[in-house]
Length: 321
Ligand code: ASP
Image (cartoon, rainbow, N blue to C red):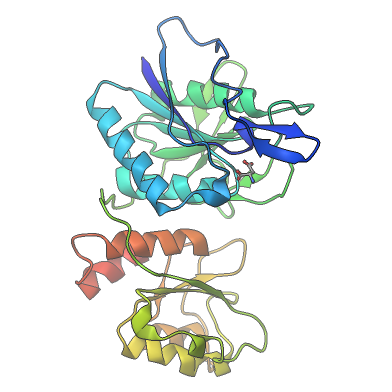
C-alpha cells in the first residue's frame, strides 16, 4: 500500500514558545520514523506550512488537484495534516470535489508538538491507519482525530482547546479506531462530486439574531455578490423585518442559501407566520440539508464554478441534496 502524506501546517506542525504557539521552519513530524505495517510505503510532501486561518480556497483546490493526480499515479490513500480551525472546510471541499475516488483522512492536533500530552503524532498514525485500511474504501473524505472517524459532510470543530473537539452533530461519528482495528458503522450519504478547477465567487455568510432588520443587507450591493448564505433561526425562520432586504438579492437573481444556526437538525420550511420558512422557501431561498454555514458557502462556490452554474434548476438541486 502506498500512502501520500500531505502536510499543510496547523498546530500539529507547531511548537510552543515563550511568545505563544507558532509554526516552525521544519515540520516536527517530518523526521519521525513512523511505525507502520512493513508493506506500507509512505511518501511525504510539505505542501504548505500555514496556520489554518491562512488557508483559502486556493490551497483547498491545490490539495484537491494533488489528490486527483495521486489517485492516477498508484497511491492507495492520502493523509492530510491541517490546522483544526478550518479543517472541516478543507475536508468538505475535498469531499465535494473528489468524492470517493480514494480514501482521504484529514487530521490535526489540539496540542503542539512539544506540549505535554501532544496529540499530533497519535492522530497522524491513526489517520494513516484509516487511509491504509480496506474498510475506508468508498467512504469518501473523513476526519480522524481522538480515535474517532467523522464524515467530512457533517464534522465540525466544537471546542476551542479540548482534544475531543471534532463532532458530527445530528449524525455522530461514522467509525472508530480500536487498538487493533478500524471500524466503520455508518455509510456516507451519496453526494454529487464536481471536480472543479476554479474557485471564483464572492459569497458572505450572515447570521440571524433576535430583532434583526434588513439594515445589514442594505450594506451589500446584490450585483457585487455571487451568492449569500443565511444562518437562520430554528427550523429555518427569520425576523420579519429582515425579509425586505433579502428580496433585493432574489430579484437580482443572486442565489440565497439557508442553513439553521441550531447545532443539530435540518432546516425545512415548517412555519407559515411572517418570516417563517414557508415564506422564505416561496421567495426562492434554498434550504440545505443539515450542513453548517461554512460548508453551505463552499457548496455554493463549487456550484458556481461547475458546468451547470448558469442553470438555476440544476444549481438549486445540487444545493438541496
Ligand atoms: N489555530 C490553529 C490552526 O488552525 C489550530 C490548530 O491547528 O489546531 O492552524
